[in-house]
Amino acid sequence: MIVSAFIIAIGFGIVSPILPQYASDFGVSAMAVSAVVSAFGLFRLIFAPASGKLTHVLGETPVYVIGLLIVAASMIATAYAPTYELLLLFRALGGIGSTFFTVAAMTFLARKSPPHIRGRVMGAYASAFLIGNVAGPVLGSALLIFGQRVPFLVYGAALVAAAGVVFFILRKSRLEDRKTKDNRERASVKEALGNGSYRAALASGFANGWATFGLRNSVVPLFAASAFVGTSWFIDSGQLAGIALACFALGNVAIVLTLAKRSDSWGRRPPIIVGLLTAGVATGALGFSPEPWVLLLLSLIGGAGTGLIVPAQQAALGDIVGEGRNGGTVISTFQMVQDLGGIIGPLLAGLLVDHGGYTWAFGLAGLILMLAAGAWVVAPETLVRKNRNFGNGKNLEES
Image (cartoon, rainbow, N blue to C red):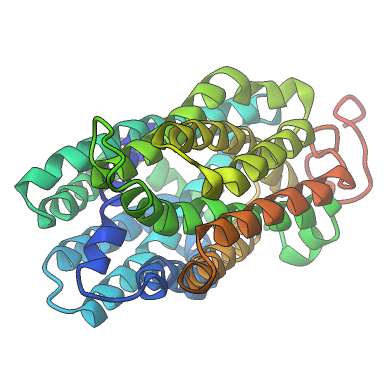
């Protein structure tokens, strides 16, 4: 799963700084460019319930492989999209595959990881994504010399390779799951919603979807490519978009590799709260960047904040689901809320850019991240709860 995550992240990093510019070449507005990102999130949202049910019926690894292949096909189609409307459609269809493999992976890891090392497991998985995201944007910018289609084709090929890795290496696990999946206890959404930590996770997931998966992948590349034209920096404004996303990913990696595992001893709440506040301040200040180096520094800091949030948040979800339980619907509901943020964020940010400027778009995203930190301040700590208890609060020693 870690090897596959790394391959996926390299490919995603390749296309993320290029996609907004690719869409803008069709002569559409900033809001229409953002809609390409939002359409991807919309289809993730629509098909998230199906992904949770499929993981229970088919098992996690088959759903994971199917999802990767769907996204691969959509990327290849995107490379040859003749119109903006078809680009929007192809990107949206990729969201179906994305929610399949994302929910399957999170469910698989939550079920397999023991509570006392869950933070390390989620940190290792997140690290693979983040290291790939550091190299991906730089590689994507370099691939532009071969034409705008090439990065999408490379990403499609990378996804096919990742699907092959999971299909063959996890064959034994897949066969075992076929025999045992019907006997697994299922974690229900109703139970999870009774836990304040799950409600806080929904809030932080929404905020992270808005700022990280939505705004950063749609508006930051446009801002980097347009706000610093003529500054006589050593790289042009188009390449600056890739470098900014790489700096964000580098901040992620630095924190995940050093501090993510600490959530197994510190608890899940402290890193999530600090991460949300850090990312909120850095994101809110992006629109005030007077020079390219300030944009890169704030991207680095914002990435560090997100690096604190994601592994601890995923570990908290694993605590809520419980070891050995099937939490497909609990995870898919969280994914739906996160995707909702990823849909609303780019659309509203694009509207604000068109009518008010980048400062308003980044400022609103920063505020939403900080409000999500408040939800975690009043939430209970999941690490000290009995792993299969959603509200009675026994600690690990008692259990």
